[in-house]
Amino acid sequence: MKIRRAVFAVSASIVVAVVLLGGIFCVIDAEGAKSSDSAVLAKLDAMLDSQKSITDDLAAIKEDLRIIKIRITQAQ
Image 1 (cartoon, rainbow, N blue to C red):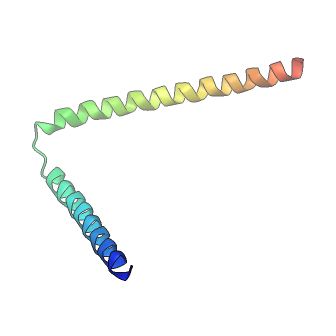
Image 2 (cartoon, rainbow, N blue to C red):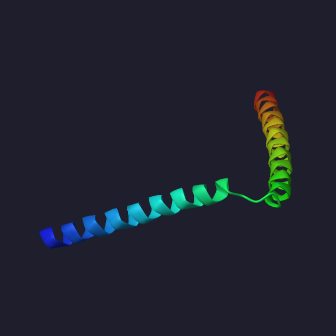
């Protein structure tokens, strides 16, 4: 039982270390992005802005539906 726990702990720590190191290397690689990536980043920013506007629109629709629900409940 103790051996299983030890093997599990060692395995888990190895997996965590690999994930953390992989993330660090990805960040380092992203910092050295080429100038051709700037066009991609601009498109991603445009997509993010459109997603934010869609989220705002959905929030407004949700609020409208909440108001309609209250009115229907009061009318009954």
